[in-house]
Amino acid sequence: MKAVISSTGLFTPADSISNEELVTAFNAYVDKWNADYAAEIEAGTLDRLDYSNAPFIEKASGIKSRFVLSKEPILDPEIMAPRIPARSNSEPSILAEISVKAAKDALERAGRDASDVDAVIVACSNLQRGYPAVAVEVQDLLGITGFGFDMNVACSSATFGLEAARGLIYGGQAKSVLVLNPEICTAHLNFKDRDSHFIFGDVATAILVERDDVAPAQHWEIIGAKLITQFSNNIRNNFGFLNHTAPEDDGMHGERGRKGLTDKLFTQNGRSVFKEVVPMVARLISAEADQLGLDPDSLKRMWLHQANLNMNVLIAKKVLGKDVSLEQAPVVLDEYANTSSAGSIIAFHKHSDDFENGDTGLICSFGAGYSAGAVFVRRVA
Image (cartoon, rainbow, N blue to C red):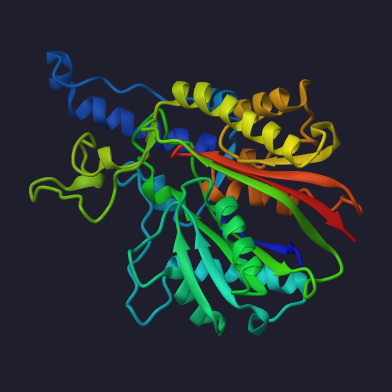
């Protein structure tokens, strides 16, 4: 018995924001800030804010645009944050809604019905509530019997969820598992922060993991996987139910934007992340490939985490010992930006149709924690 990937699914929001649109909004906010607090800036009690720049964003990250669930409020200099209306408890939550859309895409691609599924795992960075688990809500919306649970390993949640699904199958708990990665990353991003306002987008992906004897004839054999975590504060998000905002402060939407909840949103020390994560991930991939008896040169493609183009280029070069083409390590972050756990799955979903029987590849994610997951797959056709 083997656990295999039968299919993947993707939900992409209708709206996209280009770098140019984002920069125009940000720079309008900067002008307003600098004008409103000119006296404080002159006195040295507040810092003058600097403009953002679209060409620099693309050069530094490889990002050109991002899909979002709430476009207009993000581009409004008076708001600079997504506005997703609250829903009553009788309505599907937004995370469950986009998870279901991605799940249905994966099920249709595999010729499956929801009744064929035994378990649901929602694995993502940004869960909208503590309980009940979003996975159990998705299970209910799809009419799946069995069980569901949520898990969070930040940007590595999809590969960790994939390995968790494989364990459930080997343990006899399920023969078919949906791993869902709904990521509304814009909700934890401070769009008033020049260093990070361009990084994230919104999306949802799905992975259908099944026992090989019930999977479609065409599937992906999971050859092996390796997971690793190492604690670091260099990527952090402190937003949660223990946060408190003083009554006089309007928090993350405050015009001063330097107090309240803004300091609880996404932050990172980019230079340290680059310096520490690149070699960690390269070692992980190389060591697991060696353990599996795989020559890294035999990998037709590496679907790497979509956070930063320069990181991916260097990781691929360290693993293969040579420059790697975009065909070997495809990029989707130019269109989607960083979508946290979903990034490597989008790359796999969009850039795997040309694989033939016996071709091998690598799905790899890495991020806050630090965490990293490497999953080696082989096409069966």
